[in-house]
Length: 237
Image (cartoon, rainbow, N blue to C red):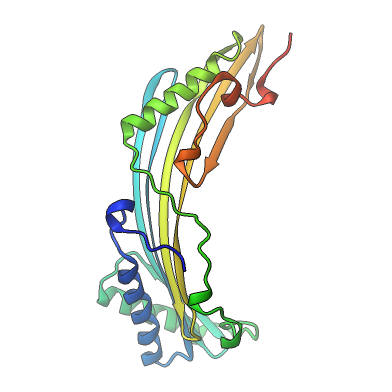
């Protein structure tokens, strides 16, 4: 079984139970309208991105988004619609929109849900260890980005400029179900650090970039001149 993230630990506004309720309601409403089959997926993402340039803070961005997508089948006709409003009236309107699209869409003989016997039971879903949230502050992210840029500038005296460095911490989760019996979802995280130094020699200039991305922030590399600059950016006299 995949881990169920706690809202407090992850920063999510919605729980897995909230999502299960949403993806149960939407297909059930589609069936009430006359759909032969339906599926739905609820998702949410949030995170922090910080960028610096030449030793100064440039931007601090926090993002949060959510979505409910519904797919409705009328035999071999299919319609899709989505909404970021999780209220019941909005979901009903979204299901109606997907249903109307399906009614007027050309038939597709390969459109449809997997056969029930091809669907893995929920108890067999494996935990892929994808979720490692970190409650990093904007100050901590900025300090790491500044260290990364400084490490790049220290690599070679010819590196005198920079297009900046950035740190990002993102996490998301989803839950999906359909009328052939599938139910499942999981949470995931992604943490990244990047830098783009600029070197010059005479009238020539060259820019290169380095980045690292990982599931767990514990694996973030310690910024250093050797770690922050890729071999392709090291010029030889």
